[in-house]
Length: 208
Image (cartoon, rainbow, N blue to C red; front, top):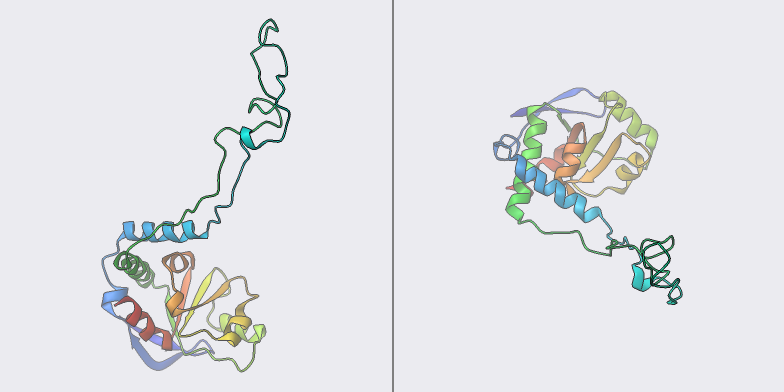
C-alpha cells in the first residue's frame, strides 16, 4: 500500500511511502483486539475501592433490644448491615485488576487495529514534525491545513518531542504519541491516524 506524504501546509509532496503488508494488510483478529483493549482498560483501574464491613465499623457491641417478645426480628448489634450506618455485606476491597498477555498476541492486536485504519483510509502520512518552540497556534494551523479539526486525531511521532507535545497539549481533538507507546486502544479510539514519516520505520521494527 502506497500513501502520499503530506507537508505542514496540507499539500501532498512528490514523496510516497510504502506501508508494510505484514502490519497494515493482515487478516484482522477481533479477539486479539478485544483482549488487548481489555488489558489496557484493566491497567487503568486503581483498584483502591474499599467499603467497611461490620467488623470494621466503630459502634457499641451492646445488644440493642431483647431477643424475644418485640414482634420484630432479633438484632444483636448496631453494626448489623440491615441498620443505617452498619457495615456493608461483601463490600469492595482493594485489588489489582491487571493481567498479562503474551507479546505475540499484543502485536497481533496492534497490527489488526492498524489494518482496520488502513482499510478505512484513515491513515495520513506527514513529514516529520518539528517545532522550534511550543506554539499551540502553529499546531492548530497544521490541523486546519490537514482538515482534521473535527473528531479525534492521533499523531504518531518517532520520538518524544517536548515542543510538539506542548504545542498540542491544550487541543482537545489532538493527541501526540511516540511510536513505541502506541496501543490498540489509542489506535481505535482515534478517528484518524497521522503518522510522521520517521515513525513508520519504528512501527515496523516494533511489530515485525
